[in-house]
Image: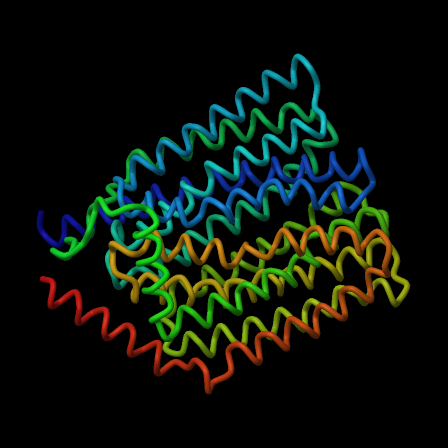
Length: 431
């Protein structure tokens, strides 16, 4: 295969990857909007809403390292395709079940749990494979375009979900989700996962025990001058961010009394912000100072977080507070892209092929590991404490963690650049 043919095939891979992510994500957002509104309407409790998220997060925390090990040992395409096929079957089974017996909270919790199990393997398998089916110079473009497609789905999902909730039964949300997963599955079948796959070093142990394999992945991260500080900060940022995940729907629906369509518009603006920045980053040059960019994005998130409390302290009418939260969520989405894109590109460029599954699995576990505690804690606090007080305290703590954990004396862009150079040297030596 000539270089030109390989580039053409990489473009085809990118098309199917982006398309699959878009379809799968729009289905997931329609489903999550419908289920979230159903739970809040049925129970009126932030803690019940938080428990639904908890069922989606615990499997990711527990299984992410295991999924990383499997992704590094088995053909990644088989792992991804199998996982998405199981997700499609799960949604179809639940759809037919709810048609016969109706929807209850236990069914919602079990469905969320099963989807999270399969999604862990599919997500880590796809993320760890980006550098294997897209050429190196277009990795940032691949990451940005993927985020653009998922951002567009994030915009459309809540809007469509809000409209569907007013006209269709809750069972239809399961059918839409199943259809979306089936289309995403077809897209992934058409991706060549080995187009740019690196040859494994001769000393790589493909059949080593899982515990030994996981220890090797941990040792790699611990010895990395950039990944370890980022993972530690991500742990605390995800914990504090749960105050917004639980609090924003609770504040808008229960405290301020917004309708399903209004809430859908507010949620959609996160996708609008991520879409705008993702499109911009897909056509600009690669970040030259990724650590500084991440630090700026995380501090911005902290200040935006504090702004969520303003409508709770100053009286605003229905159109005003909806427009206000739409603007804040737009900036939230933009800030998240400023954080996520340099992290993902840096990890793709500094992690060897045979470690990517375990490294991304560890990142998933560390970033999400403390989130369930945050969900339970904040879900409980919102039922007994002033939402404005929770938001303001959390914003201060979020900024503090970022400033301390990513201080220039601990991690800087020079160290990140050296890691990229070292990884390139290793590839040349192996070749």
